[in-house]
Image (cartoon, rainbow, N blue to C red):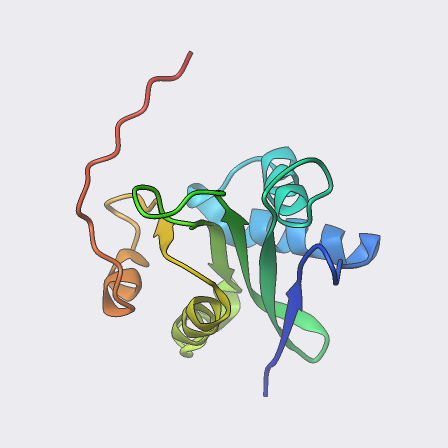
Amino acid sequence: MTETRVFDPFNKPSSIEKSEIVNFLFENLEEYGDPKTDIEKAIDYSLKEFTSFGGFILCLYSDSQIKGAVVINCTGMGGYIPENILVYVAIDKKHRGEGLGKKIMKQTIEHTDGDIALHVEANNPAKFLYELMGFTTPYLEMRLKK
């Protein structure tokens, strides 16, 4: 049995909970992840720890342990740019294949106001789940890093 907890600017996690979320994402995103400092920045953005449009963190817990986590950042835009970006989503690597990915994505979509964008590497096996949930690939993203 899983319990869902949503953290946002009005219901912030404790410093211990925040650290657990950062560590969980870092460990379970594996090769598709980022350094802990970047994960923490995305979480701080969603919690409005600095000037931002906010967002939320949705976590699945079982026996007080995180089994899945999503970080959504609001873009402050709409229409031509989706209102939200799904920055991180991860399921505990020991519990993949149990339907938790579908469950957390469904709850995230229901909890989010407006459209959602996400970036996924072409070889990421989660791409199939995102397509199953209704995400499409209308654009090819290109970036210039300076």
